[in-house]
Image 1 (cartoon, rainbow, N blue to C red):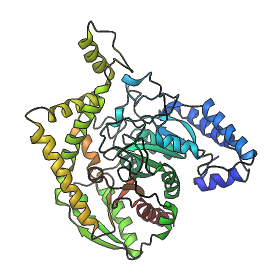
Image 2: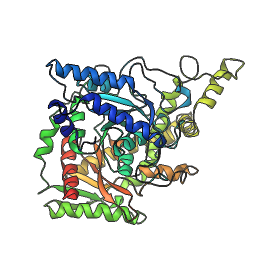
Image 3: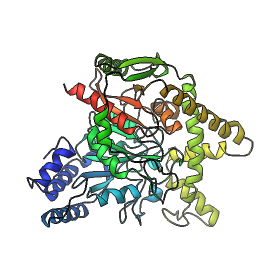
Image 4: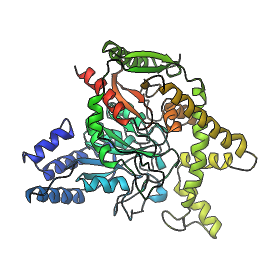
Length: 477
């Protein structure tokens, strides 16, 4: 039982051609048969089936179905779902159960979505390959010897592998877009503050944003319509009006569209297959009436450095709460309080998380704060100014999502700097807080997925989705 879109599934459900229980049972069966993919950390099984039966009864009683009635979803395991495990793919939270729902989760439940389970990720959302999980890596659905990207690799692999119709992920520096590009799905990171972060375990608080992964832009738009909006529980959430994204998508026309193509996004060392596929899609947009304009974003070389200084600084503060004293893992190998703190963190955190905590503590320390952290904040402001200037001249910025296709499992684990470069094109939009998405662009000569990234001005998610839908539609034709 496969459905091309949620709209197709919804029609079948409302016409009683199938039931929520049958659909959920089918997904759960598929998840069980594909356990070797290691996509799900926790599968809800009876909980999901009972939810489906409840929705079937609701429809049978003549009650109005919600906007996402029966939509089978996966949730990244750094989002709080009441009564379910919340591990962040870390040993330090391996036995922790959430006591409340994240706001995004609450809003999805209110519109009758069904959660199939919690999916794998890089520990505390720190990584670009899903290899940093305490539960092991997730293979790429197109080549099991390769990574699905990270940190929302489980979310992307779930959607690409038909183990969920839509998934929520989180994006700090590209963690929705990069795995979407690696797994041939749509991955949307909205404007910072567009979706409440309440109930999302913090990595870098001024960067983190919940995102949506789906096979098509229409499904992403419908989910975004539900989860977006102001939340009194999150003071960083925006008051900006939530439009009807479907209507905004329909208003988008490629003809006359000005697309900025930064030369910095096409460096000499860009993978040839990636460059060819992305260039082909851009040329198709040009043939359809869009105008391609070469632009320059000269500070792009500083993106990775600024991002890792700022996010590790925030991470070192956010993760200080995991000390073995109040909740989560507590080491039994300690003779005093100090020993409990040290051993709990040493045993509970993985190597990448410890690396980033150490880096963040260093850049915030006396004598280095002004040299690193303050300077990185100044660079962040320059990035914001440059991207706003560019988007004052063009409608959207376009380029590759990643500088290379999905790489082999284990290929970059021993070289953190090489791994960090996987996010070189996605980090700038996160630094500026602007919306961005990755749309499937096609496949390289080896049959590996390639993503095309679109970056828009603040709160222009509808425009990005509309352009992305044109790109997907063009490929289908």
